[in-house]
Image (cartoon, rainbow, N blue to C red; front, top):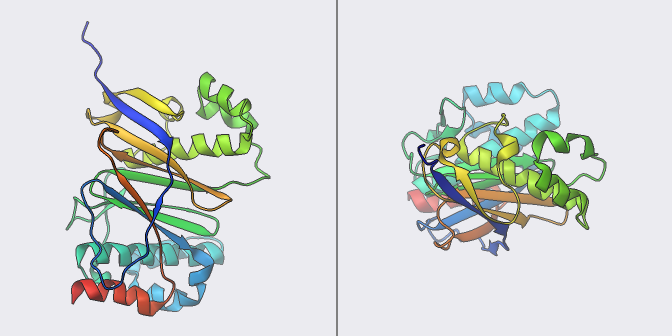
Length: 267
């Protein structure tokens, strides 16, 4: 019988290294870096009229498909900020950032396919992860009104359910496990399918069927607290023996700073 090939997935918690965006310094990444840019959406509402000008026709149509105006505004903000971030890392003009899509609908830059990115949003926050490795991110607002008990068997195995039900803080345990699974499938470019339940989410090192991954690359996944009420997880390729620099940067909320962020790199 042929032996099943497996890859390793290391899961833990991490404190993000807080860094301040230096407008005088070019945005750069080392091979082992993962930068998480956070966007507090209410702080950008006054910029919507300016930010919408950086979206193309397809993106404007997508924004209009949102039923609620607040969701339209949030999409305009985090999609345009994503383009500013990608422009800063690629030295392209913001309006020249045109996203292509894989068959799984995961966006990428055809001009810079080695620059990986992923975005997540929940309520008042959005977060964008950028890396030279495949990366996925998920953030969630830890709602106190959400009763997750009935859905546990659909998305977690017996050991994971046991850990959640016996945790001191059950809400945090649920959101920790959920965001980890979600970040990993987003990094893989998969949706929530029949494999979702079998993706590990507990601390430690796990073996994963390489058929699921479509390669034998090892992975890392880390949970982090974005704020007191927002929990996140980020997953990316690479062995845990190779240290990754997990950095967090809050995006500036003035057009002057956003434009300077790209002009300094394109000048």
